[in-house]
Amino acid sequence: MGLINEWIGTPLGALMHWCYGLTGGYGSAIIFFTVLSKIVLFPLSLIAQKNSIKMVRMQPLLADIKAYNSGDSPRIAQETKALYQQERYSTFAGILPLLIQIPIILGLIHVINQPATQYANTIFFGIDLSHLPALGSMKILWPALSGVSAFILSLVQNKYNVLQVEQGFIGRWGMAIFLVAFSAYFAAVVPGALGLYWTASNLLGIPVLAFCNLIFSPKKYIDYEDSARRAKPERAAVRATREEHRTLHAREKADAARFFAEPVKQLVFYSEANGYWRYFDRLIAYVTEHSDVVVHYVASDPKDRIFENGNPQIRPYYIGPKALTSFMMKMDADIVLMTMPDLETFHIKRSLIRKDIEYIYTDHGMTSYHLMLREHALDHFDTVFVYGPNHIEEVRETERVYGLPEKTLVKTGFGLLDALLEQTAAIQEKRAREGATAAESRKRVLIAPSWQMHNIMDSCLDEILGQLLGRGYDVTVRPHPEFVKRFPAKMERILTKYAERIGEDLRFETDFSSSESVYTSDLIITDWSSIAQDFSYATKHPSLFINTPMKVINAQWRRIPCAPLDISLRDQIGVSVDPGKLSDLPGVVEDLLARADEYRERITQILDYYIFDIGHGAESGGEYLIARCRENAEARSA
Image (cartoon, rainbow, N blue to C red; front, side):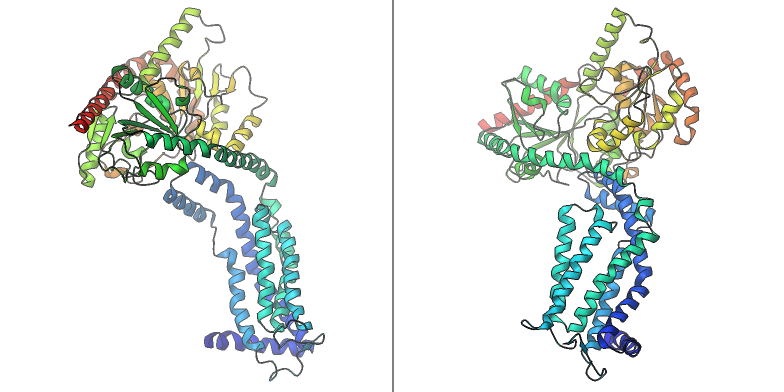
């Protein structure tokens, strides 16, 4: 306090003396001093205003970062920091005016605590401003006025402050209650002069806010109507999710009890979301058809297709994401198989009950582990079902680089690809049998992006459609299901923009119950989505890649000396185009379609090389599971 008194209290005392000499009264001097402080600090208020506008404008981008990286807190923090730097947003600038007031108040306390020796008269409207407030006297006026002034300021801020306008009801009024309570308490424990200063400061905050809004009007920089449209479906989704959690809690509790009541569980599959059944169905079918092993299927989506499956050898359970952590820690099965990586890294841990569980990872794509999974994503698995030679090479090189023990690698092929090959053959046979109409004979171009940041839907959809529409193609835009689910407002804006254009040669497909549009197309345009592999492998048609910023999950992928298939395959099954050269798109599309026969032969050879056991993808994995279950059963009975 000595330093504050010397460096701040002394000059403030001199300034207060000057105000006193100018106004002729102690109370009026404090009010005049407060006005001067607001004028001096006004540039800082303007900086805070600009900073607040930046924050509101960044809200959609911050929401995107959280949605695109859900569950990955380090990446969210990293990308948030990068966005702040890009926008030159400072978390410090917003609170700077408040921080500056702290030494001012401390200095004023020093000045005001010694008024009798410096001022002839400290009476203001019959109240001695040098005294502490007291109940039962007029001195309690300052805490009351301080609280009232804070309430008035809060009312104005809730309506006109750029940040508080964006707050919800609880956020706005929670802050208002805090400010009122703090202001009243502060004025109750300090001399009346500081209560007068605080009251005047609160009330003068209103014209300061008005001038800030006049100089940097939020309406010039922020589209509030767009924010309202965006927030409405998001709030509705939150309400629906809360209600769903309440209704599912009892079901979750009963299913967990039923699961742990089973004395022996040989094989458990875990499905993180509806739609993941397709990665397991052929494998499970093989196990149940060729053995008496009971499959325990744990799903975190109450709408998972497994609950419609009537196979008595499959026992389904619903365990939601929040309960999953403790559920997995109590796991007591022999084998747990999942497509979710990062075991031990995030919320899914290895069992605390049984240390001998065999954890098996099977991927839901045919691309690269070391690029498309996080660093150390597979470290804590015992076994990996690999689809091709690139997976074997990547796992072994990762073990070498990081000094990890060797995992069991099982060559399984990819059951989903087998299903796609069969579906595509059936669709093409049906079309050939029925004959194509004139409209159906036109070349079909499918735009099917990923949902990562900077995907086609976000960055260059307009440019692509501008180059393709009206050139005799049937164009279908099929956004990623996660894009539709996580960004309903964005999807709504896109559909509204093209509402009048949808018709003969353009359509949007947001119903994902059927994949027929994918496998009846002649060409797919994507960015970094693995759908290109599915499409080209199944149809033998080429893919066209837009070189948006590369989808990188593992920033350390270059430590593994293997070329990621996500990169090397792009120029084997198609061609790549930079976003800055989309004017070349018509010629590139025409060339790819003209070389269909050449690509058919090339892709067939690529498929044979990169994928094991085509047409029999579930057999090796199924045989391995049956054999391991048999070994575990024999060990138990020995």
